[in-house]
Image 1: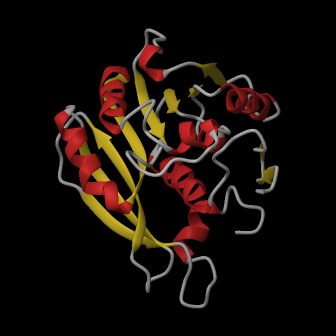
Image 2: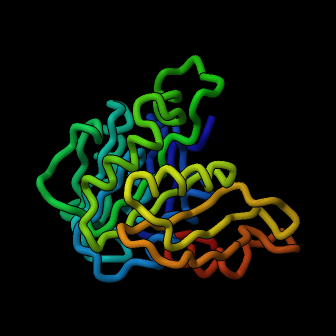
Length: 236
């Protein structure tokens, strides 16, 4: 069983009611997204889960954040984590299906760490399936909703398994979204990539591509990882 909470420098994530717990790659993703934003005023977190990404972004930038989560227990924990944070006034939690969500605004930034799996082995726990599998919201449906809700100059940041990177980029292009930045994530330099962090916009540009490692050859956090997580981890 996972730890019921995860403590950061400026906030704590309680996670015992959410199927998807705080993970190293989701923390890296949140810190990376924070590092590439600066002037965004309206932010949407699709499938917000515990609220990790919303809280990391809110710590970094003064903006209104809308965090949308469909699953009831996880939504209640999301609201709890937001309300106990320093940014309770700027982050707003919604229990909703993103396909029915409409606040009549366009967002400068949309972020998502969505269900990874499609047409794969299921868990007996329905909440785990909702969190991990794309039955409720497929990748194609996700891109359609992002295109609908994103401002013309806005950006969409997505965390994907590495093996689904090219599929995600292709499906995004079909929806009118174009990859502008791609960061492939490895555990160490000796490992193959296992995650990809991708930033999309509505304008086709040359893709800025890089690879980053979580740990160095000595088993310590890499310099890049430590730089990104310094503002968040208690012991980066």
